[in-house]
Amino acid sequence: MATASIEQEIHRIEARRRLYSGILLIVVAATMIAGFLEASRMNSGSFFGGLKQFWDYPGEIVIEAWQSGTAFFGLLVHFIPALVETINIALVATIFGGLGALVLSFLASRSLEVWPPLIPVVRRIMDVTRAFPELIIALFLIFVLGGGPIPAMIAVAFHTTGALGKLFSEVNDNVDRKPIEGLRACGASWLQRMRFAVIPQVLPNFLSYFLLRLEINVRASAILGYVGAGGLGTELRRTIGWGQGAGDETAAIFVLLILTIVAVDQLSSYLRQRLTRSDRAH
Image (cartoon, rainbow, N blue to C red; front, side):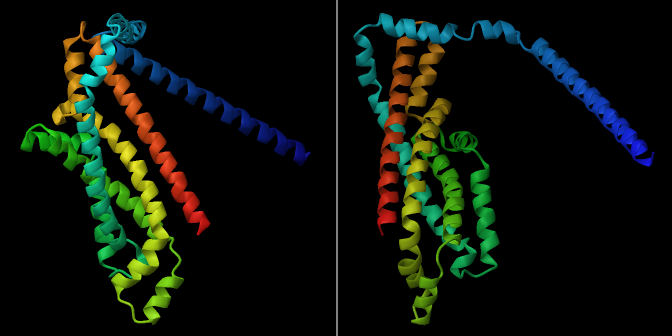
């Protein structure tokens, strides 16, 4: 009798829980629908109205590119200098950011016998450098220094220092400490221990992360060009701003950007695989 009473109580609790869950679900759904309708009403155009026109502009770009015929290939050549500028921004920023990350990562690793009070300070510095997106930093620098590739390069390098420094420091934290202790027993200095015991262990992973970051920075440099930092992004803003009639140029820029991303992705994947195989062979 007592068991039946317990089962009935359990059923009542489950039914009450399902009822409350259902009411909560209805309230959440109603709130989301009301918020969506209100946001759609406040926009200049309704969401569903804009959704119907979603493919209009891409369609115009494709049609204008097709109508340009063989002249489209000439546009590809015309925008190559802007593409080279974008790649240069990404490459220089990745090199400088990588060097900064290398230094900070060694000073932020607990397993590398660094002065303990220095570690949290360096880690917070890396937090700050990667907290701000490249776009925000570039907008500030363009306001201070003016437009051009230099503000974009500084912005990308600044963010790269924090992002790569975090990855590098995690690699450093997982090194085998036996070579470090062996060199310390022989009287080696801190720099000698890092040079001969740590860097040979972490270098393949460092290079792998560096190449991955280079790929990311090519995309970031193209986006920064849209706010006046030079390169393909600046040309893209100009052609999109002209609207109808410049669709073939817009299509040429998109084709160049996509081909570049694919090429960098394939090259970095190939080099990372070579580095991984080389690391396993040793």
